[in-house]
Length: 225
Length: 280
View: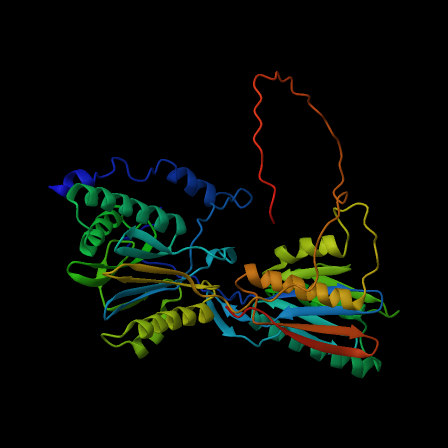
């Protein structure tokens, strides 16, 4: 039971991490990829900012979404951008999505014993122009997926995506391949639902749509309360 | 004396038999750590204001369980007596049960004495009970009411402290709400002004605090009666989903089917005609 009248030396632990909330989602299609995130930055029960998107554009074919501790998100994206420039200068070409994913895995594992508290999801087009999604854990384990949700409302979004995109737990359903319009509409709907029930998700939704034409952005308002 | 048979102190308080076992379970070996289930808290904004003719109480309607919204339309303004209402913040079960018990006690008192209870009586009973439980009951309450001595607004804390004030906010959203109240409160406001003030204070809490949200409920208490406005202001955020997510019959796979015939004997038969005429 908690001691109410303890007198004597007390150890105060300083935690180097904070949890700033936010949800990210990425979906890969036949010739497109989507990376979406909400734009709320919070801490505890307060809001730091209503306009802090969590998707960062890396190249014309790759976007990364980072949620978790905002300090580590910023540092990690700076390091990735620096490494992209270094690669471009030494190899005279842009990094492919697969290469960025592999590099990120080693960067994260390099800090195995004081991790970056960031949940990353990379969305982009691979060398053949097909959509690719790579999802990571905070210490660098990654795999290629068709769709993945990360961040505070991930447990609410992932089952719906499993059902609507992966056609899991359903029978006698025509498995049509996912079109860009359907994917964008699905992403907007799941974020509206997530904002209803997760306090850390809300304010606005930013969707980055990656096609062979480049990266296009769409912003949709969400609940502000 | 009326109070001696109205209020019977409970014989056993909380049962602490399992506390040593729980400590062992929570701090056990790394693999065996088990987290205790967390009770649902209301993470709220509640406010109250005394105006010219009575009291206005306000509350938001979101109940959270850690970071998940458990109830989008929960009622935080509880009935205590015909002339006394109470807003509750803190642990949801604690505020519900405490206010229910208080309401029962005051009803018994009213029946015995033939009088409407006074607000001070409600406050003293609450203070007594919460102090006796040493803060284990997480109920942060704002009590407001109008009785024969006038309009009163009190706050009762979980450890049993009370404060009698003309305007007040409690809950996780109290700081933004107090900002609005401190700025615009003045004595002897009229009804519309008081309602607008409380509504704006709760709105500030809803926008700035993640634990508060959705709609705003108001309760206006005067010596003529009570106006419980639920909701006073609905949330403006009603973004509709663009697609309908419906499943045709046959989507869920049926793995096995067993039919158990019930052996029934027809004993008595009656027929009752349903009125199916008319529009439905």
